Length: 202
Image (cartoon, rainbow, N blue to C red):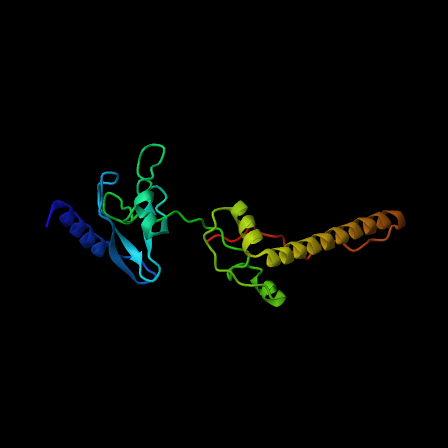
């Protein structure tokens, strides 16, 4: 067994210890033995049924599938600062703890925990369990692309509520003007509409 074979064996054993990923069954496979262009052998987790390789971004820690034959090329990619962009193993901190991708805390408007969920159920709107959207701007994009018909229904509902609120307010102003003109006290306008809140965060 030469030095390269020893390194491959060590990589296989290390990935066996570090295989804590959920999902479809995987097996370890040597993707590239190494050559003059890419010296180190590459061993990665390969999804069993499709021949895809899991690679991890060294800065965002996101895991992405790539076709097996593309792995050597992807592993040569670098960030502008010269650091490798991908690795075959999940990045870990100095104590050996796995580094996980950052996740937002904004929930989809169709999430089961949203306060309007009962109303949306009566309207027949779909349920979405997305709960890690980055921010409110991304929430709008999520609704626009993932739930276009539900998004239109929610926007129309808000428009109707707003128009009803404005109509009641104008009626109250008219009543107040009539009270001043006739001396008779008009009923006090108090809106029974709940003020819309910001989307729930986890």
